[in-house]
Image (cartoon, rainbow, N blue to C red; front, top):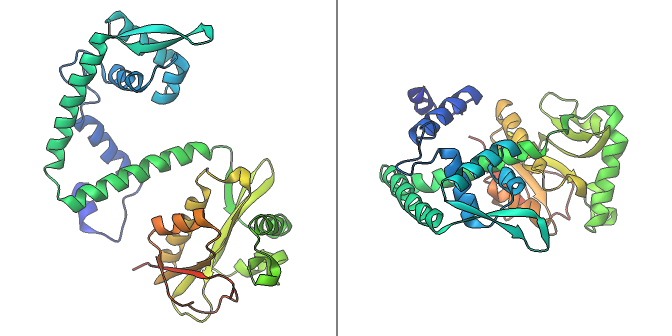
Length: 314
């Protein structure tokens, strides 16, 4: 499986391959062992020890940190107490709640475990060049964020725009535009004559627009379509999200879907225009590998958008 990944840079690993790599990683790090190194505690107990070392925690807080149910967190916490590594104290102002804190023995074990595991990982990193280590760190960070975003998005539906969504999506665009002062008289998307009939603009096979829906309400969306006047280039278009949808990772998800769609349809590059007012959006585009252009590309009809960016797709 590893050799297959290395042989084709143009074909990213799929879900089964990522799962296989994750299993190997878990095994290589000893997460299936009965004890974590020479510490005498299990990997789950070691994770609990690390979190409690960072700050006193109730069992509920520990469960949230470990992303396990409360009974599992309580069991790990009880074992650490039995081993004399953790003790409890009352929460200030609420004697009904108890927080776990490390004992002197627990702090000593944590220090030893921390040093040992850092040494172990440093040995792994010795096998990599500096640029590979940098890429690894950024990829692990992005993967962790993707896992969290996926959890945040439970209960929402991402689907293609239909004619029945036109009015709702137009309302989203008008509301968000008004929030940021992107008025129609300045030439932004809110002035587009097609705003109330968006689905008509994405009927071609080389274009698509997605909406995010929850409880039968359209809360935002975005799309991609060929860029007029620039052969082989597509444009990321109309990424608008209501406040209640922000921070859940949907902007990145739609942008990522758009880039994959563009590659599948043979586009050589993806272009976008935005405004400096939308700082969070610009940071997202930068993180996705878009770079700035000095002049506009193609014919978008939005002369008020002073920020232009492009990402090569080949």
